Length: 227
Length: 205
Image (tube, rainbow over all chains, first blue to last red):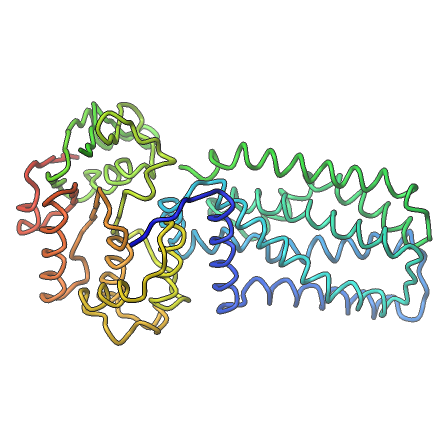
């Protein structure tokens, strides 16, 4: 058989494709995330009723839905490998950083798919008017990358623990706090129609946070992944 | 010439000593059998050899001529079959083969895949998801992905677990082929399989 040159990005892409394939067959993470998000959204919508909320309340509610929905499914990317005893198989196949990047990318795509469905439904059900849609979209996208990065790293840690259930949300929450604070603040400004320059500081924090977490993950992941 | 060299390897889990000061050296064309009673650390030693586990003390080196192979570089050269190493049950045999081939940097060769499936007696089940396979068929499938890249070092933990007589004969053939030019390491308690090792490491609890 002909051998090709291996690279970090190539192998990360192969791991991503494999996870996508396995997820399409089992639909475990997709179902968990989407059902959690829709249930929470419906519960909030019924409890609020016809009251029109201000952006100070609407913005945190959106991020709470996104954060906890993602926590219900993003850990599965590593937990599945440990539970099905395929983690050692994967450890023998490629470098830890290829595995991290592949799984990180899968979680980012999963979170984006959730947002494509949930955010428009949320805006419609709550009657929210977004006055700066460009800034709003950027904050949601960069904030999601931050949440997916934290969740992927913490998922790798908790997948080797015996009690995995609520650990992801508990451990991810303090680390994700900068994303949540800036995301909530930036989303509120975007809803109120602030200019791009006014939301720039929140965008900078979200972007820097994502870069720091991804860099740290690439440096630390080998120690988490190798026993 | 490829070479696996262990020097004074010891392993402890917490305060429990698993084994102490294990040394051996095998080169291409040689084979090693690791044997010992249950709990003596055969699987632990296998995991150390394929770098899934770090030893508490001692050194394990994999070399090609004088070049030391770093743990990050051994992936294309090692094949492992063991009860703790599973394949992706939600994917078919062909999908598993494709994933393993692509991540190892090989081109996906359907003819080669079919030849391996025939050799392991799995012809006709190429497109079935592995969750529909019996435990013996899964064991055979593990060999398809372990030998697909013609590894320099083939490591087998309980090589014929779950296999019937025909399956065992197929595996013995693979073991014979492997030790002609490359390195074969097996962990077993079956006397028939221990014979495949030109050198033997006996572990005692």
